[in-house]
Length: 317
Length: 139
Image 1 (cartoon, rainbow over the protein chains, first blue to last red):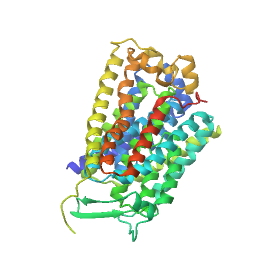
Image 2: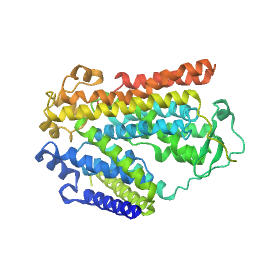
Image 3: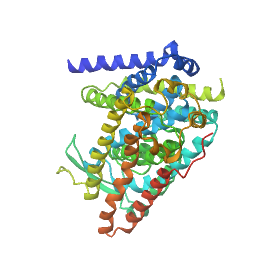
Image 4: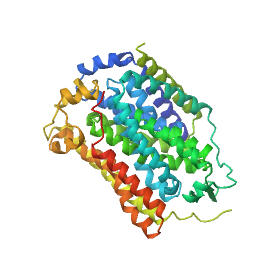
């Protein structure tokens, strides 16, 4: 019965999200801008809160980060300029990562030794990305954001992560950085030991990931996980946990740049952060009793639609 | 092989505990200050019903037209309802720096030179980002 209730709630959330993004009143950002100045002050923050609450539920069910959905959808369907959306997107991803970090670290699902070297590179590059993102013309950022979101949608569709990659021998850099450890797999009670390989190419890729995270204000879980898992050989659970924790460091550096440049409007930021966090809590509870695979494909489709829209908007079409 | 859960290293536990209290404290402050802001107890720097005129502008135009301070200038406006929210936001953005500073002694004690250097560099990078010294003034 609980399962049916959760399924019904999930279906309602999906339909509400689809309705929200297809509602004629704000079907275009330009329309939303006009609408924006005619509404009472509380209208858009309230809609944003509800939207982010639903986004939080769906992000958990679809297994994607809230930040990666927030930036393309809010910049595409709300009257807010991309500069503010990116600044808030980083804070949304940061708040979620900070809240999840302690539990992941305590249970060894996130590892400081794996995260720290990678975080140093990603956070430095995220500053560069944020500065670039604020310096480049908005239409260029829109085009690049659209292309990135389309790529992410494809990556989420076709990328097949590996539960436990085989690492025969740890490489020199991984060994020197002591990138190894163990955690308990609760579903089987197994003690899982891990170590990394191909550490150098992995570290290089975090240069690109950092720049993109800072430039677009996206959480970078979509890129962190495949690099940690498929390239560096970390088990999937550890990769997901370390990636989430990593966002708390990478996004911190970029968030400060946006914050100091005036890109944070509290009336936007607080409803977004609180809405997405509350939605995530509800999503985790639903996930415990229901695993609707179809949600992942609906969310990827919405993401693809938002990416194409951002791309076209950047081209002025 | 089945066994008990491997213990996380002590520096990782310290980091986790600090992050737990710091981030949830920051989120609680954020919610309280937001209600103070929308209740109108404190006067806002930008009147709340005028915000919608600004949020569709590029940030450079918003900063210019609304006379918004950049860098740490917001700290001088904490008495205003809207800027009061920056306390929670800054705490959220500052927690990672605090956590790294407080786990540094663990690596020093372990004589782990590589991680001492990495932690110091990370703190410096985050402080540089937070300093307000970097910026282009927007496009």
